[in-house]
Image (tube, helix red, strand yellow):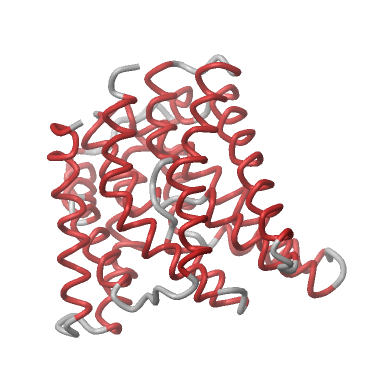
Length: 309
């Protein structure tokens, strides 16, 4: 595990540097917001487009892979909701806690780190995980919260949901890349070099932005945050491992990437949703902070294990 830990440390060191910059106010919240926007709309989108455009379609979608990941996520999602119900929390809060239990920081942390650590062949599985998280679970939490408050699911709600997905630059860039890749044409050299140059900013920019955004997080409700961090960092990858390795016929290498992606800490976009809907934002914030801190060890351990399967 030590060699893997040493390889992952630079990634988490960049997060730590961003946290220090944000905590000391050398990098204020406004700067963090603009850096995040640059990474989200430009650097990460360039990286995702290039991956999608240069990968065979079979590496971007595999039914067994999707079913293994989805079934494991649903199991942990329902468990997290059940625990929230037992504590007397309403449906909206239970669903938001379930998001914390299954949605990892795949876009900003997983894509750059896992591709670099596990090799270029990890790109396809990571993009599949990212797509499922964005399309299925981002839609699910929106439907649950909005439907719970309105008492029904309307056509207008569904239309807004579709528009939201169409405006997500990560989904758009992956779809555009897949469309280009389906033509069989190679990317023109100047375009490819442009995407490589811009995409190279995604890794340091995203990791620094994660750390800087964590500087504004609170550590309240630690007991709940500890439970949700355990669910995300331990139960989620364990459920994915069982589904991928023993229930569904998933390629071993792809399964390893899926398990590693499932071990990532709670994603920052869960807090954005929690804040937007006014549903347990402090609880989600604490879960992101705790899970990210603990993941320095747990993610390294999982990557070390999947490297041997």
